[in-house]
Length: 343
Ligand code: G3I
Image 1 (cartoon, protein in one colour):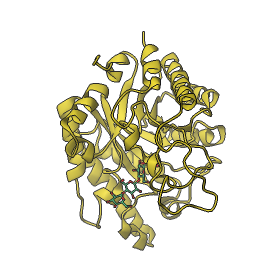
Image 2: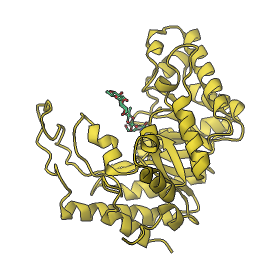
Image 3: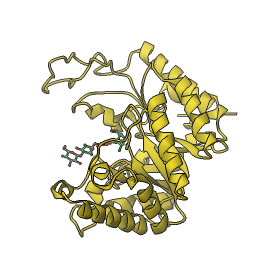
């Protein structure tokens, strides 16, 4: 079999190439998977294990073992780790739901950032310091942090992260922040952080888009606007959903929602959709290359289709095909379109 080209080598002069990463991928699978990951990617973002619910189960208990496995793996294979994520309204530890005073939320917030960023100082390249703080209209999401700490919590999070881990790049990360209203809210956050004299190095546009509906114009405008603020722009969780919007339910045997239809592609993606997926990825990478001076990293949200969260969302048991590699790590047509763009 001919060797598969390496994405990281293909784009080495342009930008970093990352993947979401889980412990199971590097420990429980065939050693071929490990080799494959190291061959294709030079950056990785822990998909779940550095979220607060997993790292910080009780007030004074931190469980760093899983995250440490990923930072050790990164060190061994020259893969830079982007910590994900310090402050997020979702996947919070259960004990936080029992906190109702401003002082206690402040204590949790401060201790969490100091302890986690401190532990991974020198071990992660960067942090998604704050994740998904915005509503679609650009206002701030009514999270437990906003409600108890007020809108300065975002700047405070960056300040604390900078103090605990000075050499680490610090990012704000969100989805749909290429859309005009949400982008305006994102720019307001960035300006506020900078005006306070606090460092922010980059902005992550997650990139959970849909095949045939990738908002290229908004993406390009966003690269320009964020770069004009002096920030690195990253595409941090890229995947393209291929299942139709009205398909909610599982493929077989699971509870179907009222408006569910069955999966039109339970076993394989038809050529027409495969072709559209390839065209969309090609157009995206053309744009990234055009702006390679400002786009520093492109991270896929999973190594192969079998890893993708989209197989389990909105409910479990779907079969989706959103990435460049199929369930056997075999490159799809989209992969070859993307690789062919490199100079
Ligand atoms: O590991 C447990 C397992 O032990 C348990 O039996 C099972 C039953 O629910 O759950 C498993 O945990 C799941 C975990 O993924 C690992 O598979 C959680 O339920 C599930 O909620 C979790 O989903 C993650 C999701 O974030 C949580 O919000 C996805 O893997 C992850 O891809 C997704 O990633 C987010 C980014 O962090 C932020 N941006 C959006 C993106 C997609 O939603």
